[in-house]
Amino acid sequence: MIVCKFGGSSVAEAQQIRKVKQIVDSDPRRQIVIVSAPGKRSKDDEKVTDMLYACNAMVQQGLSCKDLFKKVSLRYTTILSDLGMQVKPFLPVLEEVRQMIDAGHGAEYAASRGEYLAARMVAAFFGWEFLDTDPLIVINHDGTVNPQTWDNIKKALKPKVKYIVPGFYGCDPEGKVKTFSRGGSDITGAILSSASHAETYENWTDVSGVFSVDPRLIPDAKVIKEMTYREVRELAGVGAGVFHEEAIAPILASGIPINVKNTNAPQDAGTMILPTREIGDHTLVGVSAKGGLSRLSLRKLMLFKRTGIRHALLTMLHIFGVRPSFSLFGIDSIVWFFESSQASDSVLNAMCGRLKSEFDLEEVAVESGHAVVGIVGSGVMQDSSVIAKSTTALATDKITLNFFNYGSSDTSILIGVSGNQAQDAVKSIYRALF
Ligand code: ASP
Image 1: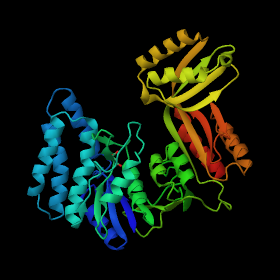
Image 2: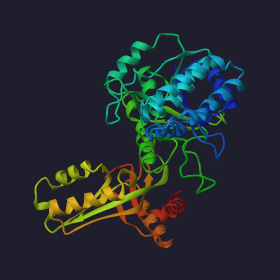
Image 3: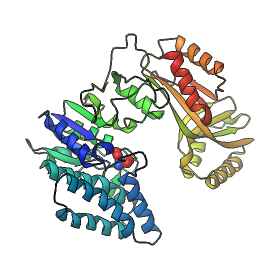
Image 4: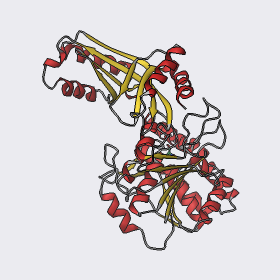
C-alpha cells in the first residue's frame, strides 16, 4: 500500500486535481491520499492558508472576516464547478467555517480549514472516505507527535477503504485544533505512512525531486536520485524547500522509503529518500543556504568558571522566546545563532540588558543579517578535499566566513556568511564541489 501526499500546487485548481486523480488511479496500491490547502495558481496568486491567517488577523482586530473569506470560498467553489461538481452542498460547510473563524477560534483553527476543506472536496470528487486528523493526530504543545496518535490512526483505518486525509493539523492533548509548522502536510503524510505500514510514502509536489542546489541559482541544477533520511533533514535544515525537515521523525523507526515526485511530470523518477545509501563516489548530495539569522555574542573573562552558566544563559534566552539553532564557544565567549523572526528588536534589547546585568557580562551584542550555508552528504567527513575546495572557492570569490562548523554532524559542514553573500556563497561552493 502506498500513501501519497499532494502539496498545495497539486490541488490549486481543477486541472491539477484531475492530474492527481489520474496519478492515484494509475496504481491501485495508492490508497491513502493526504492533501494540502490550495496553493498558488501563478506567481502572484495567494495561498489559501495565507488568506485564512489574514481572516483570523481581522477577527483579532475586532472585525468580521466575512468579506475576506469570500475570496477563500471562491477558490473552492471555482474548483468544484470546474470539476463539474455541485457547489450547493458545499456552501453550508464554507459558511460554518467562516462563522467559527469569526467566533474567534484562533489562528491555528483558521489555517487548518484550508486542508480540511480541500480534503472534503477531493474526497467528494474521488468518491473516497474523508478521514479527519482532528482528533486522530495528537500534537504536543512543543510540536512533536504524541504517541497516542499511532493507536488512534490504527483504530480508525478500516481494511479495503480508501481515504482522503487533510494535512497540516491535528489537535493538542486538550483536544483543540493544532497545526504543525508551515508546510506541515509532509509530516501528516509521514504519520499516515508509518501508522498504516505503507510500502512507500510518495510526496507529490511541483518539481521532479530534491535538487542538489536551488535551481533559481544554478539553472542546470540536478535532481538528487537517492539520499538518506539524515541528508534530507540536514539539507532542509539549511533552507532546501522541497521536503519538511520535521517529516523524517515520524517515519524514522519504520524505514519506509519516501519518493518525492512531480504531479506535472509523473514519469520522472524523482528523489528516493531512504534510511541509508551506498556512498560510493557520491560523498555529497547538495548545498543550500538559510538566511534570516541573528547572532548573539557574549563575552566575559572566566565566563565558564561559573558552573551551569550555559544552562542559566539558555534559560534566560528561553524566557525571551529565543531558541538558538547553532552555538560556538570560545575560551571566554559564547556565540549563538537564532532565527531573527523569534523576537522583535525591543524584546532583544530587553534580553541583552537582562543578560548583561544578571551575568555581569563585559559584552553582549545582537546582530541580524546572518546566514548559514550547509554542505550536505553522508561522505562529507571521508573526503578531506571538501574543506579545502570550499574555503578556497569562498576566498577567491571574496566571501567572508563568520564561522565554520565541522564535526558536529557527520553529514554536513556549516559555514556562516552574511545574509547578502549567502547566494553567492552557495554558487561558489557548488561550482567548486559538484
Ligand atoms: N497549507 C499549509 C502551508 O501553507 C501546510 C502545507 O501546505 O503543507 O503551510
